[in-house]
Length: 337
Ligand SMILES: NC(=O)c1ccc[n+]([C@@H]2O[C@H](COP(=O)([O-])OP(=O)(O)OC[C@H]3O[C@@H](n4cnc5c(N)ncnc54)[C@H](OP(=O)(O)O)[C@@H]3O)[C@@H](O)[C@H]2O)c1
Image (cartoon, rainbow, N blue to C red; front, side):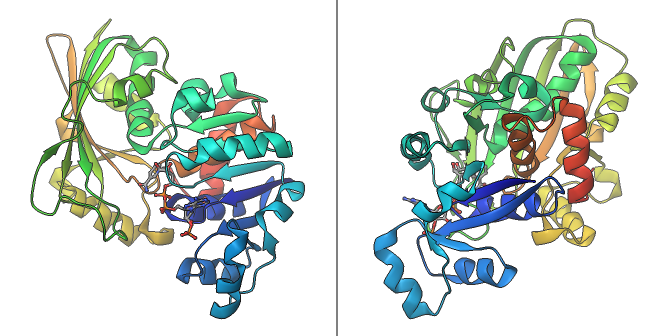
């Protein structure tokens, strides 16, 4: 049984904590918070030992009546790996501390690949991260692109990808970002950083991306145009995506024609937090024209990277050499497809 710490029990951190907790080969031995808010209170209610990542704030937790086990310095000696889920840019600074403390670290997509050194996607480059000390799980958008592009590349080879990514303006729980009433080219420069980010895990893929921000919180949406090496029958692409774990083909005809309806479906599935860890691909959008595959997909940004973090722990701690076995185990224990 491997011991896992979570630094930053926020949107991603609390989900990774739950995903680790339902595995039988790893456990959470501590989560950190800086602010004594409802998430800190609920972490303790759930039975996660709570550590303070800003020791000078200990008094605030006492005042709020939230029981803490210690400060983050007390946590390092208890863990095999720290999953850093702090806001983008902070993880890279924490890496130096983990290094000094002799602890392995997993980071999230808000960190720069160059600062962490290695990036991870379960389907694309699991084996390249076996035994690694510091690894970054690529962002929610990059994870979404890899989930569908890797099996298509394996099926028939990809010459070139172009993708237009429509990104949510904020997460549902956020009140400080937007836009509220605008479509924002973001970044306004072309291409966006998402293509190079995919290349940190699918090293040789020729991919160019453009991204926009829109006033929605539910999901990201991607529009892909993929030039194929050896164009197969469309049914072969459909069969491949249907057989790919963590990919879900959805149909507008069955009432799943928008991100709103897909998230309603996720609520009806009764999953924790109504998460949809799978990438939803609109079946009707799949089309091959002149050797080019077109499709549209939706990404639940708060949850698609969560099973990837579990697989990344197994790779880094060399608990499982075979990515397919880790993916299957993670999915079974989380109750996802
Ligand atoms: N949200 C998404 O949709 C999403 C998707 C994929 C990847 N990511 C990436 O995942 C990472 C975390 O994002 P998030 O959305 O989960 O952030 P979040 O909801 O804001 O949570 C961040 C957590 O880090 C803690 N924190 C803040 N500043 C800290 C500091 N200086 N030192 C230590 N802990 C600190 C916060 O603690 P307190 O609340 O106690 O202050 C909070 O628990 C980022 O790299 C992000 O790019 C996010």
